[in-house]
Image 1 (cartoon, rainbow, N blue to C red):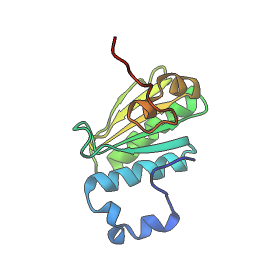
Image 2 (tube, rainbow, N blue to C red):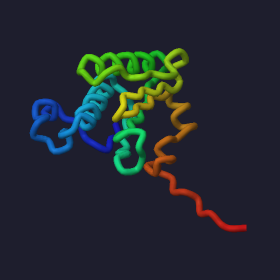
Image 3 (cartoon, rainbow, N blue to C red):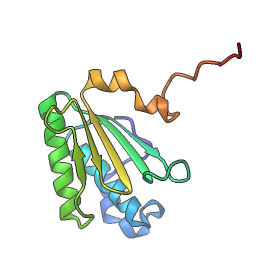
Image 4 (cartoon, rainbow, N blue to C red):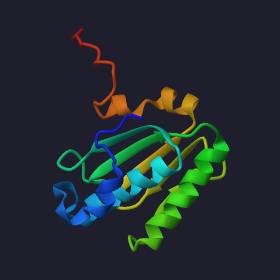
Amino acid sequence: MQQAQSLSASADNQRGTMPDTDTPADRLHQLVLSQLDDDQAQEIVSIPLAGKSSIADYMVVATGRSTRQVASMAQKLAEKIKQEGFGNARVEGLPTADWVLIDAGDVVVHLFRPEVRSFYNLERMWGFGDEKPAASGTA
């Protein structure tokens, strides 16, 4: 599992003492990462957007093994976000579950099937992919 931030069992018990969980956005981010880990999401990547974009503070990208797992992860995550008092998350793409977007306000989550994730390669678009941008020339 690939993450910008590591998860541990003790992290949940020490929320108040961890510097990265001071704000509601950080707590929501930790909740999302924890739930995706519990649901056995693959290749979880967290991209910090604070200062780079006004759409959210974090973008989380993860992969499910099948459309059924992607749909299940999305539904469970939206329910957990609501249960924990972060409001109703907007969910798009659930009927086909190839790519499901969950907008929870401060955290935006993209859940993909493996083929769809590799096609769109969001990490590269945000500068977190393995490939470097091609050099541009003038004509």
